[in-house]
Image (tube, rainbow, N blue to C red; front, side, top):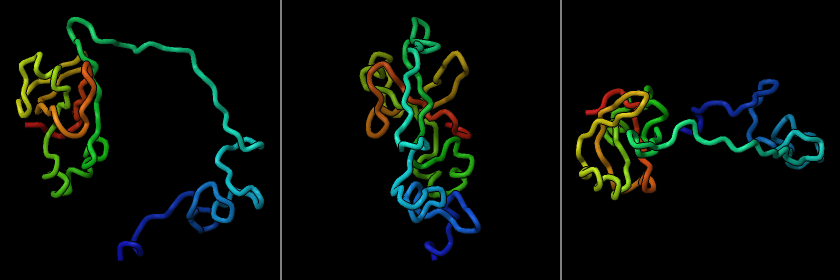
Length: 152
């Protein structure tokens, strides 16, 4: 039943879905004899160009001494507005978590499972410290799953 009830693969041209993108015989935009057409240039090559270096708009300083990234988790898509409605996914990952390197946690007297308030120039969120397992950031970085509907 699962394989019968699914969405369409895009693009849909003349009522037919595209099973394999960029491949001759399955993608309506790939002409006969082209085999694979991934890039839109006539010679089939990619257009690659470099942009000038731009430093980060903000860097760690004395007040906010870690890089903060708003990460994602496997169980919830983006903000979790849909996936948090699925009881199994909510039980698997029910609250906001701050993934932090063990040495950064130690220097702040934080332990795995501690409840903390994560502050940035943009706002704050209540979170639970996680120093092990998946999403372990390098020293100097922390990842906060901040878009959870509620934390603790």
